[in-house]
Amino acid sequence: MDVTTLKQQIKNATPAMVYIALGTQQVLLQEVRELFIGLIPEEERVMNVGSYDMESTPLAVALDDAMATPFFGERRLVLINKPYFFTGEKGPAKIEHDLESLSNYLQHPEPSTILVFLAPYEKLDGRKKIVKELKKTAVMIDTAPLDEVHARQQIQANLANDKYTIDDDAIDELVQRTNADYGLMDANLDKLKLLTYQTRHITRQDVKDLVPQSLDENVFDLVTAVLNHDQTKSIELYDQLIAGQQPPLRINAVLISQFRLLLQIKVLSSRGLSQGSLAQKLRVHPYRVKLGLRTVRHFSLLALENAYLGLVNIEKALKTTQRDPKLLFQLFMLQYSQQQEVGMVK
Image 1 (spheres, helix red, strand yellow):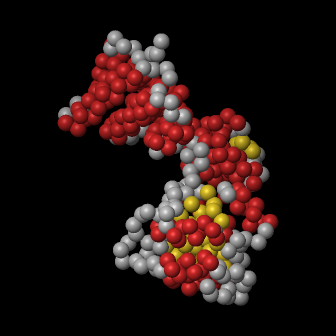
Image 2 (spheres, rainbow, N blue to C red; image 1 turned 120 degrees about the vertical axis):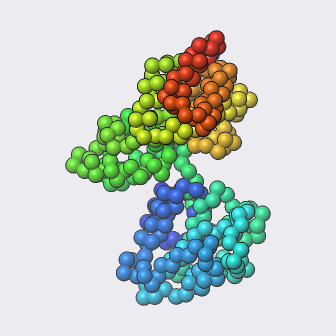
């Protein structure tokens, strides 16, 4: 189930005895944590909520807590963080975990305890005996990074829950400025809600005023200008980044990274890989792949290669000479624009 479904379930029904939240989206893991803590009355939390990190605490300590009787309350909540023993990852050698005792607990969970594993990993190791037993007992909560569609839906749901509305072009702007990263989108909601407290309505201008563009987003505009051989726009955008106190080496590194990604998308998409398959194979957010696909269809592989190699040469010059970064970039744009291959797909 997703986090929204979890909210409905624990609100309208008795919670299960064992859960595992699996996925690397930290903001979703934190939401899950807060939802379960909210089930324990505030005055009882000191005695009836336990949280244990498996990278520093033996599992046996958490299980002892899970098997204890609630102290002047109906339920006990035990949160087990970073249970790496469910994955192929290796943890600290000094920590020993009693997985046999966990196996026994999963077969006979304590009815008055909610045991929640918070697993910030992409997947579990399904070959392990303990994982097979976990899947038989635990309710699985998906906390994997949200794609663009689900990130939009979640943001709108969060706002609606607080009786706020947002214009379609405002959420478009939020997606663009955060590269559809749900964690970044959610992190900016408090500022937006505070700004619009009286109207409880968020406009595109509100987003533009409060949400800064990421370096990647600014560089993406620069990438487009470079590929279009727009020297004036390219140099203007580069100067803006320098004026914004961005180090030239960092700007160039992000440019190289963007063109490397475009080259990979160009080559792999020509082999028939879908947007989802590309995101998975390249291990990047689907939104970046979506923008990349939209870009590469207009430019040849040679145009992308020439830009990439030119930027690699800038990096070498930045590291080995004292030449002015702005001058190096201007020379790059001049040479790139003068190439016979203009880069546009006919």
